[in-house]
Amino acid sequence: MKALVEHIVKALVDQPEHVQVEEVQEGATLCLRLMVHPDDVGKVIGKQGRTAKAIRSVVYAAAVSPYKRVRVDIVD
Image (cartoon, rainbow, N blue to C red; front, side):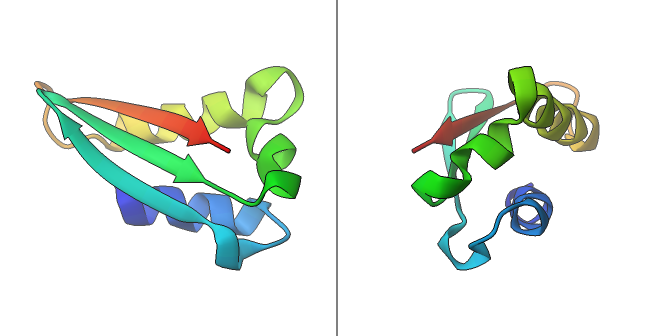
């Protein structure tokens, strides 16, 4: 999951070297914390959050186990 998010986001931003994804297990939920350069936050979120929603949709569809939840947080 981490590699998937990194791959998608690095294609979107101007400074891909600043993209970091951290996996944190919180009970049955896998939390992916996405950190990008402050100048690229707007590109990752998109107009009215559409890009962030699309990233989350892809991650939810790629989730392996139906019993495990996945959450994507964008941290600046």
